[in-house]
Length: 444
Image 1 (cartoon, rainbow, N blue to C red):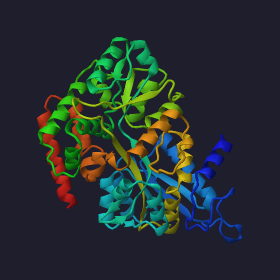
Image 2: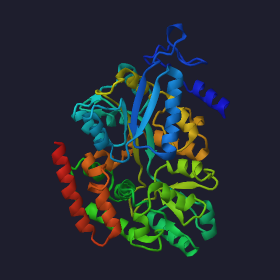
Image 3: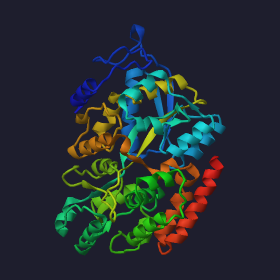
Image 4: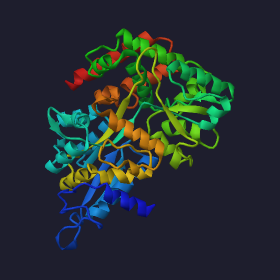
Protein backbone atom coordinates (compact mmCIF):
# COMPACT_ATOMS: atom_id res chain seq x y z
CA UNK A 1 0.00 0.00 0.00
CA UNK A 2 2.80 2.37 0.91
CA UNK A 3 4.70 1.61 -2.27
CA UNK A 4 1.60 2.17 -4.40
CA UNK A 5 0.87 5.46 -2.61
CA UNK A 6 4.38 6.79 -3.19
CA UNK A 7 4.18 5.87 -6.89
CA UNK A 8 0.81 7.61 -7.21
CA UNK A 9 2.10 10.76 -5.61
CA UNK A 10 5.11 10.99 -7.85
CA UNK A 11 3.32 10.29 -11.12
CA UNK A 12 0.47 12.62 -10.19
CA UNK A 13 2.78 15.54 -9.39
CA UNK A 14 2.87 18.79 -11.23
CA UNK A 15 5.73 21.26 -10.72
CA UNK A 16 5.53 22.08 -7.05
CA UNK A 17 6.91 25.57 -6.74
CA UNK A 18 5.32 25.96 -3.34
CA UNK A 19 7.34 28.85 -2.00
CA UNK A 20 8.90 26.15 0.15
CA UNK A 21 12.24 26.03 -1.56
CA UNK A 22 10.97 23.28 -3.86
CA UNK A 23 12.10 23.20 -7.45
CA UNK A 24 10.58 19.92 -8.64
CA UNK A 25 8.81 16.72 -7.66
CA UNK A 26 11.61 14.36 -6.87
CA UNK A 27 11.86 11.07 -5.07
CA UNK A 28 12.51 12.59 -1.65
CA UNK A 29 10.96 15.26 0.56
CA UNK A 30 11.08 18.87 -0.55
CA UNK A 31 13.96 20.63 1.14
CA UNK A 32 15.48 24.06 1.33
CA UNK A 33 19.13 24.85 0.71
CA UNK A 34 21.52 22.83 2.79
CA UNK A 35 19.02 19.98 3.21
CA UNK A 36 16.96 21.65 5.95
CA UNK A 37 13.20 21.54 5.65
CA UNK A 38 12.04 25.11 4.99
CA UNK A 39 9.42 25.43 7.73
CA UNK A 40 11.16 23.64 10.62
CA UNK A 41 10.11 25.11 13.94
CA UNK A 42 6.82 26.54 12.69
CA UNK A 43 3.36 25.26 13.60
CA UNK A 44 0.24 25.68 11.48
CA UNK A 45 -3.07 25.59 13.33
CA UNK A 46 -5.94 24.37 11.16
CA UNK A 47 -9.62 24.60 12.12
CA UNK A 48 -12.41 22.67 10.42
CA UNK A 49 -15.65 20.81 10.96
CA UNK A 50 -14.23 17.32 10.54
CA UNK A 51 -14.35 14.71 13.26
CA UNK A 52 -13.91 10.95 13.34
CA UNK A 53 -12.89 9.30 10.09
CA UNK A 54 -12.75 12.56 8.14
CA UNK A 55 -10.47 14.20 10.71
CA UNK A 56 -8.25 11.12 10.78
CA UNK A 57 -7.91 11.09 7.00
CA UNK A 58 -7.25 14.84 6.76
CA UNK A 59 -4.54 14.39 9.37
CA UNK A 60 -2.76 12.10 6.89
CA UNK A 61 -2.64 15.06 4.49
CA UNK A 62 -1.31 17.33 7.21
CA UNK A 63 1.30 14.71 8.13
CA UNK A 64 2.43 14.59 4.48
CA UNK A 65 2.79 18.38 4.57
CA UNK A 66 4.89 18.08 7.73
CA UNK A 67 7.11 15.45 6.12
CA UNK A 68 7.61 17.70 3.12
CA UNK A 69 8.21 21.01 4.90
CA UNK A 70 9.06 20.38 8.54
CA UNK A 71 6.11 22.48 9.76
CA UNK A 72 4.10 20.90 12.55
CA UNK A 73 0.30 21.04 12.37
CA UNK A 74 -2.49 21.17 14.93
CA UNK A 75 -6.09 20.46 13.90
CA UNK A 76 -8.97 21.93 15.90
CA UNK A 77 -12.47 20.62 15.26
CA UNK A 78 -15.02 23.43 15.35
CA UNK A 79 -18.19 21.38 15.12
CA UNK A 80 -20.87 22.70 12.79
CA UNK A 81 -20.72 26.31 14.04
CA UNK A 82 -17.55 27.29 12.16
CA UNK A 83 -18.40 30.97 11.98
CA UNK A 84 -19.10 31.32 15.70
CA UNK A 85 -16.07 29.32 16.85
CA UNK A 86 -13.60 31.06 14.53
CA UNK A 87 -15.02 34.48 15.39
CA UNK A 88 -14.56 33.76 19.10
CA UNK A 89 -10.98 32.62 18.57
CA UNK A 90 -10.15 35.78 16.61
CA UNK A 91 -11.67 37.98 19.32
CA UNK A 92 -9.72 36.06 21.95
CA UNK A 93 -6.42 36.57 20.16
CA UNK A 94 -6.11 32.87 19.37
CA UNK A 95 -6.97 32.78 15.67
CA UNK A 96 -6.09 29.62 13.72
CA UNK A 97 -3.82 30.05 10.72
CA UNK A 98 -6.00 28.13 8.28
CA UNK A 99 -9.72 27.39 8.32
CA UNK A 100 -11.41 24.73 6.20
CA UNK A 101 -14.65 26.58 5.44
CA UNK A 102 -17.60 24.33 4.52
CA UNK A 103 -19.95 27.04 3.25
CA UNK A 104 -19.63 29.66 0.53
CA UNK A 105 -21.73 31.99 2.66
CA UNK A 106 -19.28 31.72 5.56
CA UNK A 107 -16.32 32.36 3.25
CA UNK A 108 -18.01 35.52 2.01
CA UNK A 109 -18.76 36.56 5.58
CA UNK A 110 -15.13 36.08 6.62
CA UNK A 111 -13.90 38.07 3.60
CA UNK A 112 -16.34 40.92 4.19
CA UNK A 113 -15.18 41.17 7.81
CA UNK A 114 -11.61 41.55 6.59
CA UNK A 115 -10.41 38.33 8.21
CA UNK A 116 -8.84 36.69 5.14
CA UNK A 117 -5.58 36.94 3.21
CA UNK A 118 -5.87 36.65 -0.59
CA UNK A 119 -4.28 33.55 -2.07
CA UNK A 120 -0.63 33.83 -3.03
CA UNK A 121 0.47 33.95 -6.65
CA UNK A 122 1.65 30.33 -6.49
CA UNK A 123 -1.69 29.16 -5.11
CA UNK A 124 -3.66 31.12 -7.72
CA UNK A 125 -1.55 29.61 -10.49
CA UNK A 126 -2.32 26.12 -9.18
CA UNK A 127 -6.04 26.90 -9.00
CA UNK A 128 -6.04 28.13 -12.61
CA UNK A 129 -4.19 25.04 -13.78
CA UNK A 130 -5.86 22.34 -11.69
CA UNK A 131 -9.49 23.39 -11.17
CA UNK A 132 -12.54 24.23 -13.28
CA UNK A 133 -13.47 27.94 -13.15
CA UNK A 134 -16.55 27.23 -11.00
CA UNK A 135 -14.32 26.40 -8.01
CA UNK A 136 -12.39 29.65 -8.44
CA UNK A 137 -15.65 31.57 -8.59
CA UNK A 138 -16.94 30.01 -5.37
CA UNK A 139 -13.62 30.75 -3.66
CA UNK A 140 -13.69 34.42 -4.66
CA UNK A 141 -15.37 37.44 -3.10
CA UNK A 142 -15.67 40.66 -5.13
CA UNK A 143 -13.11 39.38 -7.61
CA UNK A 144 -10.45 38.41 -5.05
CA UNK A 145 -9.55 34.74 -4.61
CA UNK A 146 -9.47 33.75 -0.94
CA UNK A 147 -10.49 30.09 -0.87
CA UNK A 148 -8.91 26.91 -2.20
CA UNK A 149 -11.43 24.09 -2.59
CA UNK A 150 -9.54 21.03 -1.39
CA UNK A 151 -12.39 18.60 -0.72
CA UNK A 152 -15.54 18.39 -2.79
CA UNK A 153 -18.72 16.42 -2.34
CA UNK A 154 -21.07 14.81 -4.82
CA UNK A 155 -24.33 15.32 -2.95
CA UNK A 156 -26.64 13.59 -5.40
CA UNK A 157 -25.94 10.01 -4.38
CA UNK A 158 -28.21 7.54 -2.58
CA UNK A 159 -26.31 4.72 -0.88
CA UNK A 160 -27.81 1.27 -0.42
CA UNK A 161 -27.08 -2.21 0.79
CA UNK A 162 -26.96 -4.61 -2.20
CA UNK A 163 -27.89 -7.43 0.21
CA UNK A 164 -31.03 -5.56 1.29
CA UNK A 165 -31.98 -4.86 -2.32
CA UNK A 166 -31.37 -8.49 -3.30
CA UNK A 167 -33.45 -9.74 -0.39
CA UNK A 168 -36.31 -7.43 -1.38
CA UNK A 169 -35.92 -8.22 -5.09
CA UNK A 170 -35.52 -4.58 -6.14
CA UNK A 171 -33.02 -2.78 -8.35
CA UNK A 172 -31.58 0.74 -8.29
CA UNK A 173 -34.48 3.07 -9.19
CA UNK A 174 -34.49 5.58 -12.05
CA UNK A 175 -37.09 8.02 -10.69
CA UNK A 176 -38.10 9.44 -7.31
CA UNK A 177 -41.43 7.59 -7.36
CA UNK A 178 -39.61 4.35 -8.19
CA UNK A 179 -37.28 5.01 -5.25
CA UNK A 180 -40.19 5.31 -2.84
CA UNK A 181 -41.81 2.19 -4.33
CA UNK A 182 -38.55 0.26 -3.94
CA UNK A 183 -38.31 1.57 -0.40
CA UNK A 184 -41.71 0.18 0.50
CA UNK A 185 -40.70 -3.19 -0.93
CA UNK A 186 -37.53 -3.10 1.16
CA UNK A 187 -39.71 -2.27 4.18
CA UNK A 188 -41.98 -5.23 3.45
CA UNK A 189 -38.92 -7.48 3.52
CA UNK A 190 -38.04 -6.47 7.08
CA UNK A 191 -35.95 -3.27 6.97
CA UNK A 192 -36.98 0.37 6.88
CA UNK A 193 -36.33 2.04 3.55
CA UNK A 194 -34.22 5.01 4.69
CA UNK A 195 -32.03 6.00 7.59
CA UNK A 196 -32.43 9.79 7.85
CA UNK A 197 -29.91 11.84 9.84
CA UNK A 198 -32.38 14.39 11.15
CA UNK A 199 -30.26 15.24 14.19
CA UNK A 200 -27.91 17.00 11.77
CA UNK A 201 -29.89 19.77 10.09
CA UNK A 202 -27.47 20.04 7.16
CA UNK A 203 -28.52 16.63 5.86
CA UNK A 204 -32.11 17.86 5.58
CA UNK A 205 -31.04 20.88 3.52
CA UNK A 206 -29.36 18.42 1.13
CA UNK A 207 -32.57 16.42 0.82
CA UNK A 208 -34.49 19.61 0.02
CA UNK A 209 -31.93 20.86 -2.51
CA UNK A 210 -31.96 17.70 -4.59
CA UNK A 211 -35.75 17.60 -4.69
CA UNK A 212 -35.95 21.33 -5.43
CA UNK A 213 -33.31 21.34 -8.18
CA UNK A 214 -35.04 18.49 -9.98
CA UNK A 215 -38.60 19.76 -9.52
CA UNK A 216 -38.10 23.50 -9.98
CA UNK A 217 -35.12 23.48 -12.36
CA UNK A 218 -31.71 25.18 -12.32
CA UNK A 219 -32.88 28.75 -12.97
CA UNK A 220 -35.15 28.84 -9.94
CA UNK A 221 -32.50 27.01 -7.93
CA UNK A 222 -29.99 29.76 -8.70
CA UNK A 223 -32.53 32.46 -7.91
CA UNK A 224 -33.50 30.90 -4.58
CA UNK A 225 -29.83 30.38 -3.68
CA UNK A 226 -29.22 34.12 -4.21
CA UNK A 227 -32.50 35.01 -2.45
CA UNK A 228 -33.72 36.64 -5.65
CA UNK A 229 -36.71 34.31 -5.31
CA UNK A 230 -38.61 34.23 -2.03
CA UNK A 231 -38.96 31.02 -0.06
CA UNK A 232 -42.71 31.55 -0.13
CA UNK A 233 -42.67 30.83 -3.88
CA UNK A 234 -44.98 28.00 -4.95
CA UNK A 235 -41.97 25.99 -6.16
CA UNK A 236 -40.63 25.84 -2.59
CA UNK A 237 -43.99 24.74 -1.22
CA UNK A 238 -44.16 22.04 -3.91
CA UNK A 239 -40.70 20.71 -2.98
CA UNK A 240 -41.55 20.69 0.73
CA UNK A 241 -44.78 18.85 -0.05
CA UNK A 242 -42.83 16.20 -1.96
CA UNK A 243 -40.33 15.85 0.87
CA UNK A 244 -43.07 15.82 3.49
CA UNK A 245 -44.66 12.73 1.96
CA UNK A 246 -41.42 10.87 2.62
CA UNK A 247 -40.87 12.28 6.11
CA UNK A 248 -44.32 11.32 7.40
CA UNK A 249 -44.29 7.80 5.97
CA UNK A 250 -43.41 5.58 8.96
CA UNK A 251 -42.86 2.64 6.62
CA UNK A 252 -40.03 4.49 4.89
CA UNK A 253 -37.97 6.01 7.74
CA UNK A 254 -36.09 3.96 10.32
CA UNK A 255 -37.52 4.78 13.74
CA UNK A 256 -40.05 7.16 12.22
CA UNK A 257 -39.71 10.92 12.59
CA UNK A 258 -38.60 10.68 16.22
CA UNK A 259 -35.93 8.13 15.35
CA UNK A 260 -34.68 10.30 12.49
CA UNK A 261 -34.40 13.36 14.74
CA UNK A 262 -32.27 11.31 17.14
CA UNK A 263 -29.93 10.04 14.41
CA UNK A 264 -26.78 11.92 13.40
CA UNK A 265 -24.97 11.44 10.09
CA UNK A 266 -22.59 8.65 11.19
CA UNK A 267 -25.51 6.95 12.90
CA UNK A 268 -27.54 7.01 9.68
CA UNK A 269 -24.71 5.24 7.86
CA UNK A 270 -24.47 2.70 10.66
CA UNK A 271 -28.19 1.91 10.34
CA UNK A 272 -27.55 0.74 6.78
CA UNK A 273 -23.98 -0.59 6.84
CA UNK A 274 -23.37 -1.36 10.52
CA UNK A 275 -23.46 -4.79 12.20
CA UNK A 276 -27.21 -4.62 12.86
CA UNK A 277 -28.84 -3.00 9.81
CA UNK A 278 -32.12 -1.20 10.32
CA UNK A 279 -32.58 0.31 6.84
CA UNK A 280 -31.73 -0.43 3.23
CA UNK A 281 -30.78 3.08 2.06
CA UNK A 282 -29.21 6.29 3.30
CA UNK A 283 -29.18 9.49 1.26
CA UNK A 284 -26.07 11.66 1.49
CA UNK A 285 -22.96 12.57 -0.42
CA UNK A 286 -20.09 10.44 -1.61
CA UNK A 287 -18.48 10.72 1.83
CA UNK A 288 -20.84 7.98 3.02
CA UNK A 289 -18.34 5.59 1.45
CA UNK A 290 -15.56 6.58 3.85
CA UNK A 291 -17.72 5.88 6.90
CA UNK A 292 -19.07 2.60 5.50
CA UNK A 293 -15.55 1.45 4.67
CA UNK A 294 -13.53 2.66 7.64
CA UNK A 295 -16.01 2.26 10.49
CA UNK A 296 -17.96 -0.78 9.33
CA UNK A 297 -15.57 -2.63 7.06
CA UNK A 298 -17.78 -2.51 3.99
CA UNK A 299 -16.26 -3.11 0.58
CA UNK A 300 -17.37 -0.27 -1.68
CA UNK A 301 -18.98 -1.60 -4.84
CA UNK A 302 -19.65 -5.01 -3.32
CA UNK A 303 -21.64 -4.61 -0.10
CA UNK A 304 -22.08 -0.83 -0.26
CA UNK A 305 -23.11 0.92 -3.46
CA UNK A 306 -25.00 3.97 -4.69
CA UNK A 307 -27.34 5.17 -7.39
CA UNK A 308 -27.73 8.79 -8.57
CA UNK A 309 -30.43 10.78 -6.78
CA UNK A 310 -33.32 10.17 -9.17
CA UNK A 311 -35.35 12.71 -11.09
CA UNK A 312 -38.45 14.06 -9.33
CA UNK A 313 -41.61 14.30 -11.40
CA UNK A 314 -40.82 15.50 -14.89
CA UNK A 315 -37.56 17.19 -13.97
CA UNK A 316 -33.98 16.21 -14.70
CA UNK A 317 -31.87 14.23 -12.25
CA UNK A 318 -30.12 16.71 -9.92
CA UNK A 319 -26.36 17.19 -9.54
CA UNK A 320 -25.64 19.06 -6.32
CA UNK A 321 -22.13 19.55 -5.02
CA UNK A 322 -20.43 21.12 -2.05
CA UNK A 323 -16.94 21.54 -0.74
CA UNK A 324 -14.52 22.70 1.91
CA UNK A 325 -12.38 25.71 1.07
CA UNK A 326 -9.06 26.37 2.80
CA UNK A 327 -8.52 30.03 3.74
CA UNK A 328 -5.69 31.83 5.57
CA UNK A 329 -6.60 34.21 8.40
CA UNK A 330 -4.85 37.56 8.71
CA UNK A 331 -4.71 37.19 12.49
CA UNK A 332 -2.99 33.80 12.45
CA UNK A 333 0.44 33.55 14.07
CA UNK A 334 1.99 31.52 11.21
CA UNK A 335 0.57 33.13 8.07
CA UNK A 336 3.54 32.23 5.84
CA UNK A 337 3.36 28.57 6.81
CA UNK A 338 -0.42 28.70 6.52
CA UNK A 339 -0.21 29.94 2.93
CA UNK A 340 2.38 27.27 2.20
CA UNK A 341 -0.16 24.69 3.37
CA UNK A 342 -2.73 26.11 0.91
CA UNK A 343 -0.18 25.93 -1.88
CA UNK A 344 0.37 22.28 -1.01
CA UNK A 345 -3.38 21.54 -0.83
CA UNK A 346 -3.75 22.93 -4.36
CA UNK A 347 -1.60 20.13 -5.78
CA UNK A 348 -2.65 16.68 -7.02
CA UNK A 349 -0.08 15.25 -4.60
CA UNK A 350 -1.99 16.45 -1.53
CA UNK A 351 -5.34 15.29 -2.92
CA UNK A 352 -3.92 11.83 -3.61
CA UNK A 353 -3.18 11.28 0.08
CA UNK A 354 -6.84 11.50 1.12
CA UNK A 355 -8.10 9.94 -2.12
CA UNK A 356 -6.33 6.70 -1.23
CA UNK A 357 -7.69 6.81 2.32
CA UNK A 358 -11.29 6.93 1.00
CA UNK A 359 -14.37 9.04 1.68
CA UNK A 360 -13.03 11.89 -0.40
CA UNK A 361 -13.50 13.55 -3.77
CA UNK A 362 -11.20 16.18 -5.19
CA UNK A 363 -12.26 18.89 -7.65
CA UNK A 364 -8.62 18.88 -8.82
CA UNK A 365 -8.90 17.74 -12.44
CA UNK A 366 -5.22 16.76 -12.58
CA UNK A 367 -5.48 14.19 -9.80
CA UNK A 368 -4.82 10.75 -11.26
CA UNK A 369 -8.10 8.76 -10.95
CA UNK A 370 -5.98 5.74 -10.02
CA UNK A 371 -5.42 7.46 -6.67
CA UNK A 372 -8.93 6.49 -5.60
CA UNK A 373 -9.11 3.13 -3.90
CA UNK A 374 -12.19 1.67 -5.59
CA UNK A 375 -14.09 1.82 -8.86
CA UNK A 376 -17.23 3.33 -7.34
CA UNK A 377 -15.41 6.34 -5.89
CA UNK A 378 -13.36 6.66 -9.06
CA UNK A 379 -16.54 6.82 -11.17
CA UNK A 380 -18.10 9.37 -8.81
CA UNK A 381 -15.01 11.56 -8.95
CA UNK A 382 -14.88 11.41 -12.73
CA UNK A 383 -18.55 12.40 -12.86
CA UNK A 384 -17.96 15.41 -10.62
CA UNK A 385 -14.92 16.63 -12.56
CA UNK A 386 -16.66 16.03 -15.90
CA UNK A 387 -19.63 18.15 -14.78
CA UNK A 388 -17.34 21.17 -14.78
CA UNK A 389 -19.20 24.44 -14.45
CA UNK A 390 -22.63 22.83 -14.87
CA UNK A 391 -22.70 21.52 -11.30
CA UNK A 392 -24.94 23.38 -8.85
CA UNK A 393 -23.32 24.22 -5.52
CA UNK A 394 -25.08 23.33 -2.29
CA UNK A 395 -27.71 26.03 -1.78
CA UNK A 396 -27.49 26.31 2.00
CA UNK A 397 -23.72 26.68 1.72
CA UNK A 398 -24.23 29.75 -0.46
CA UNK A 399 -26.49 31.44 2.09
CA UNK A 400 -25.40 33.61 5.02
CA UNK A 401 -24.27 31.37 7.89
CA UNK A 402 -27.13 32.56 10.11
CA UNK A 403 -29.60 31.02 7.67
CA UNK A 404 -27.83 28.15 5.94
CA UNK A 405 -24.97 27.11 8.21
CA UNK A 406 -25.78 27.39 11.92
CA UNK A 407 -26.81 24.53 14.16
CA UNK A 408 -30.14 25.11 15.88
CA UNK A 409 -31.05 28.11 13.73
CA UNK A 410 -32.30 29.14 10.31
CA UNK A 411 -32.83 26.53 7.63
CA UNK A 412 -31.28 23.71 9.64
CA UNK A 413 -33.71 24.12 12.56
CA UNK A 414 -36.76 24.85 10.42
CA UNK A 415 -36.28 21.73 8.34
CA UNK A 416 -35.84 19.72 11.54
CA UNK A 417 -39.14 21.19 12.69
CA UNK A 418 -40.64 20.21 9.34
CA UNK A 419 -39.35 16.65 9.73
CA UNK A 420 -41.01 16.56 13.14
CA UNK A 421 -44.31 17.80 11.66
CA UNK A 422 -44.51 17.99 7.85
CA UNK A 423 -48.22 18.82 7.79
CA UNK A 424 -47.87 22.51 6.82
CA UNK A 425 -45.45 23.03 3.89
CA UNK A 426 -46.81 26.51 3.23
CA UNK A 427 -46.28 27.57 6.85
CA UNK A 428 -42.75 26.19 6.82
CA UNK A 429 -42.01 28.10 3.61
CA UNK A 430 -43.14 31.32 5.30
CA UNK A 431 -40.85 30.68 8.28
CA UNK A 432 -37.96 29.93 5.93
CA UNK A 433 -38.53 33.20 4.09
CA UNK A 434 -38.63 35.20 7.34
CA UNK A 435 -35.35 33.64 8.50
CA UNK A 436 -33.70 34.09 5.09
CA UNK A 437 -34.77 37.74 4.78
CA UNK A 438 -33.37 38.52 8.22
CA UNK A 439 -30.04 36.80 7.48
CA UNK A 440 -29.54 38.41 4.08
CA UNK A 441 -30.45 41.85 5.50
CA UNK A 442 -27.89 41.44 8.30
CA UNK A 443 -25.25 40.38 5.76
CA UNK A 444 -25.91 43.57 3.80
